[in-house]
Amino acid sequence: MTTASTHVLDAARGLPAAGMRAALTGPLPVPPPDDATGDGPSPDHERAPRPPSDTAAEPGGSLPAAAEPEHRTATTDDDGRIAWGDLPGPGTYTLELATGDWFAAQDRDTFYPRVVLEVALGTAHTHVALLLSPFAYTTYRGS
Image (tube, rainbow, N blue to C red; front, top):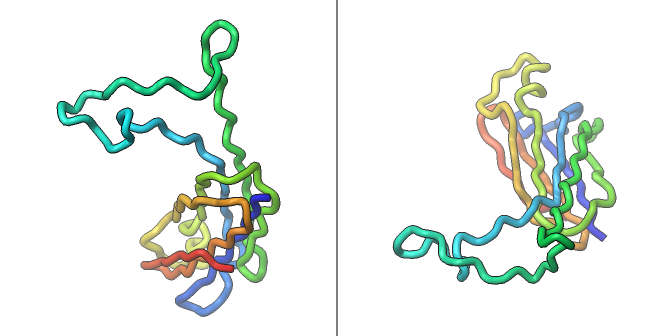
């Protein structure tokens, strides 16, 4: 089962970033490779023919539509945390944090009006931590 959580800390003040809005979207569709080998553009910069798809065509010859990514929104709690709960499954997700609004509510400037991360979630729980200050941030996979 795929689950995730987020923890945002105000590194400049040494406090949790309580009340920050966030959005988690995914799993995102997997883009097709640029060429048949997946190694990038062919030497003449034209796309090479694509290999046949493993996906069976629907009646009428069209391929089935990819599932729409799920979009969730939440706000960090008093400890700067969000428990996203059960997710649709493994894959790439986008985590977007409204850092500019959060700093503005405290009458503080920031260089980053929003922080957008793409994370690869597996079948186990994943914790995404963000250490934030007005002019820098870092992130890591926590436990």
